[in-house]
Figure 1 (spheres, rainbow, N blue to C red):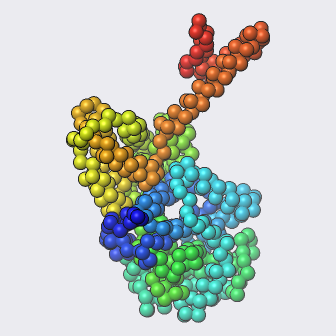
Figure 2: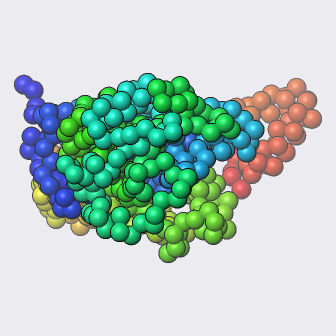
Figure 3: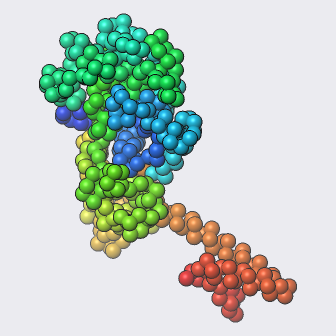
Length: 498
């Protein structure tokens, strides 16, 4: 008999940025979810703020799958069209980096896309279902521009095409996501310069005519040029998820203008609001201040993993950094500091140690000192409340206390409850939170190290038997230099780690 998926019994609530409140989640098609998350612009190494956003949506993706939903998760790669300062003027970020490093733009794209994937793999993020690129969808972007022009919401000017925000706002609501009023925006905007091709300052580019020095360019009905930054997400989300889909996510900084423009483009092209639930992850700070390259108040994922930063006392495992990030709700500002990471690391190892202890607990006829079923319900209540990972983690530590109480003979657990708590801990710690048990990894490494040293001891014994003392001494001295000391005794040779 087939077991009903968990989503049938769990009521999930999601904070919807467009309504400003938590709403019961109901997908467009029962059992299926379309989720789109804005990916990186690949012109530099992925920064920690990006990582936090993608870890947040990895948590969301994991929990939706845990509930039994079939999720199509689309996350784009911006490899063209993202101009400096998120504006409609200036140089393309990828092209600029290519010019500065004297490389082809696609070499820049390849280098930083690989870095992005490598860092997220270290954080144990699950790759999305589809990861399309802006340059791979130029034809579709040109076609949707034609549709928006035909629908009367865009105009061509000197080879560029702009979205007519004022015209759109006559029948639609530009600003509904960010809570901005177009009249107020117009009143607070300076007059356009004589050089501008726009009718109004709020209009944004759908297609930009390329200047002669612009490297990345494609032919279009209007000019040789490149698409506007906002357009790719509208094209790729609707292509792979449909004109209307369930969830659209990204960083809080993308709410305006990027996501606002996406809504406008979707409504102008398709006549329907594209997204039902808008989700936004909050920012990271470092030592209480905004992260900024210009001030030097910055920390990279690589620096966390290596400890090579004056802001850190030591290196931290990627899974510890992930655990630290999940101890804050995705909509909260999170402050990075060495002290906070060290505190998280202690908590992480306590959690992993208790999972090891759980394996070998003494089983009793009855459970005393803990209501296992109620605890399971509370774990689900936490995640069903807009993916509240910090509350879930607090509940997991309630179980840690109980496990330690059993170990100290201050509580008991039945066989049925033992299986239940073991299953639930594994599901939430490893499947939903996506943590990795480094204790197991360390044990595995220790076993392999012991085997390797024992082999070298055997080779050294053979060398001594053959009176090859040069090789024998070399093995001993090289191991000592690595911190492994051999000790010869009556029972044979043993080793210790210095």
